[in-house]
Image (cartoon, rainbow over the protein chains, first blue to last red):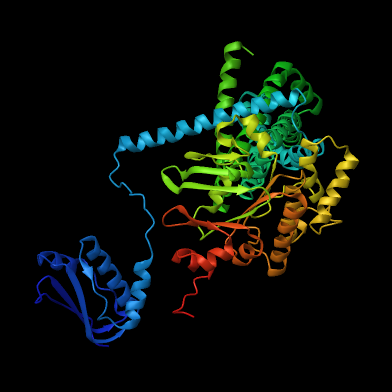
Length: 375
Length: 256
């Protein structure tokens, strides 16, 4: 295969002729145009670029790619290329490629300073906060309309949502809560054994589950299960223009889609938490009786005496707050979703992540408030 | 003056953009009562963006859209919603609410904005579905029917309240020639029977010539409306190469 060669001939004033010889095949590689551009630039007063391909034996896309790049670079320097001496096929392909109009490309600023990037992030965060506040405001207005009987509400769909948020989650909640109860019992046993106070495992498991762990585990589970499903569902509706169809019909999507979901989860979360508490206590009970040899009656009495009504209320407040957080995060991300499959995935992920982070923050706040109030 | 009285939709000096990216600028046209108005142009020319502004989903950067002389974007939300209630919209993918049956989809506008009883609504729903050839499908869910049927069901929903203006976004997209033709026939029938004014966004030449009374051509490069007129007249008389190229599917003399 004859080697590619490029010779630059600037014998004609104002014109530079690029003489190409050899086989210009993509397999042989594509020469860089930078050196040629430098030479063209050094030869002052060049206005036109011509080509001589009489010594060229073969060509394919490799030649087209080289010439395309070269001509574009020359055009930027106001040097016109004359294609007429190129083979007809090359002329046609280049005309086609050069005819495509460039879309405006937003210049990427590579040397953004640290402060610019921080400022950008802060602005994005600020915009997100404003959108969330706006969304919460819409929810408040929609709830107002719901409680005054002005909202369009489909009860059959609401019942279906209650089932999805409640009964359908029972198996997973049972499994996780029993396991958490078992873990609490084992951890407690290791320490309490040192003092011969294994019976207080009942207190550890009971208070631990009822006051925070039951609500928290149920919430994390529901964030991954129901919160994600809300985000995906609404995101897909956004993609399929179903939400646009509601808006143009004059129906508020928040009223129609968000309110039933928030309400269903807020109702079901405390119930699921009570169930999770029972399952957790059952897990601790199984370990206490079977592996630690504790008396079942004694265990039950210790659980009863340690779990006070205030513990139960604290747990239920947790669950109510978590229900609001999960439903709002799921619906907010779903409603914000852009119109692509990737955006639905992104919305789902964001819904779960923001719900879990908010759950942890809310737990910390509630725990602190309870501490201050002495509850 | 006569035109402004007859004009159901008037677009004046409309500029549309996404953030800093201009999609269309300085659009001016009007659509008369009972007219089938086609908005045509290549992909990416801004047809769907224009439609979003016409149906109240995207606020323009500048200019105004008047419905029967009332400037839509200058009104508060309540008035805008009242105007929008006179619209019927067929979205590109149908946009049927997937958790509703076809009957429930068609019934929702009636439940919201009419005083009909449950049984009357069911009768109207059955009628609307029959009009689009879907009699007996009221209990089906959107996922259980074909794409063409979904579009027809969506059309039944769009005409549920006998709208004054019906907007179609690419009605033939993704449909076979038979279903596409069926939708074109339905568009003509809706105009003739309901007396509706119809705006169709499309780049399907067969539909443009079959149903369009008037067509506006949007150009991607200049981001503007470059011509307006009856499709057949545009084909015969337009001197603009972009319009000719579009209406002849780019078949020029060189290619035969």
